[in-house]
Image 1 (cartoon, rainbow over the protein chains, first blue to last red):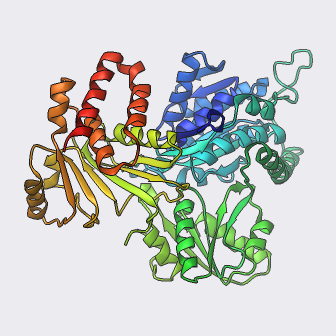
Image 2 (cartoon, rainbow over the protein chains, first blue to last red):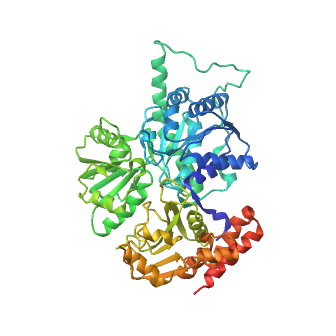
Image 3 (cartoon, rainbow over the protein chains, first blue to last red):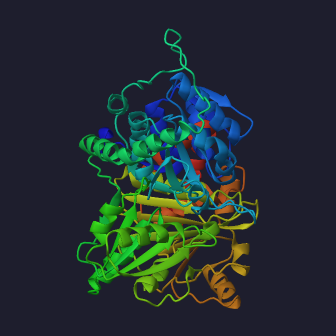
Length: 380
Length: 194
């Protein structure tokens, strides 16, 4: 094996840290929480060993981590942080300040259940809790995607001046060793370029004010602009993903369509379970079953038109959520219904919830779902 | 029936603190260096020293996409024979598959214990006194590195030379050359046992 292929075996958390080492952000406010800690811990080692030149700010809570990230990003720095679960929930208030102020902060999330009851294991409850916070949300299936999307996410944030979450499944991805290929550091640095901040706070020759009041006469306009920026971010995401494909050979989009073209039954899901489901699709295809799947890669903004095109020829849509929206339909289920209604498509949609609090999901269970044998909404 | 015929799958049964996760990762890193694809991950339960743990390892010539725990292993490694009383170590282990166990018991005694606790296994059992070898060569009863040698001998999943090289690469900086040498000697001794 030649050295320049750079095939490694790392956990998802270590893969994120590897990408961050190459990006080398200027500021990283950090606060530990399982299962995110391996990311900042690994990065802190790089910093302590002098491999990176990053100002790591050890703060007293996640609320402070995000607040420090906001200050540093407004000052003009390239800023990264990471969190999970209750930590993300504690940040909630300031997440909106980051997005409303249009600050390009990158945050890695090792997605985990929310208490009560206390549970440290993986599901998507935490990130679904902030899906309306104005942050872009990019999901990863495995360690390779964590590495790639960390790089894409950082560049995207700075291009569209909006904060980005890159999300991996807590434990299933963050703590599992898998193979990945990494790029040469020089290549990543060239791809990233420098952050060119618009009106940074530290440009004292051109003083600006951050965090002003906007009352009845202007708040509304700010919010309209923010939504336009979010919707416009899709085109930039696709452009950056295409540029990244040129240097890495790996393709990413808003959705990954797998055997969906002629599928009668299409499963919609995301995260590490997607890989498991792909194996089931292959197996059922061999038996002559016309099944396929769609992986949600970019969840915010959500591209309904693009999803509708993929789902167009399917007779039945099966949606797998790893979170609830207690009191209404689960998050992905709602989006799929929106997609179909807006596209004037009446299709059978089945909704299932799996993996809450780190419950394993097996191929046999996914097969049962495809074959109509899973009756209960909860795949336990 | 096995879902992944093309993927070599292993379950390690151990107790928290015995080093099963590290052992699985060493094999994983070695297989990666040999150009193969791997996955290594623990069963994500609460981590308590001494409590029963499961660690999964997959090795394949093609990329591995599934993320479910290993349910139908080709090989099972048991690092502590007291687990025979509480863990169903032979679950889904068929006639042609193998059980490697750190124990002073012989093959028949191990099989009798499995049967006694409601299990059934007709395949090969490879007992090895890994704790004993570790104690005599390294000076501490740590079976996890020693059993690597037996694993390589039985499965040929990776080469002994590359495993030893990877072991040195990981441990020499951490524990020094002398202790690393002793560990390597113990791995090689386990590899040479019948």
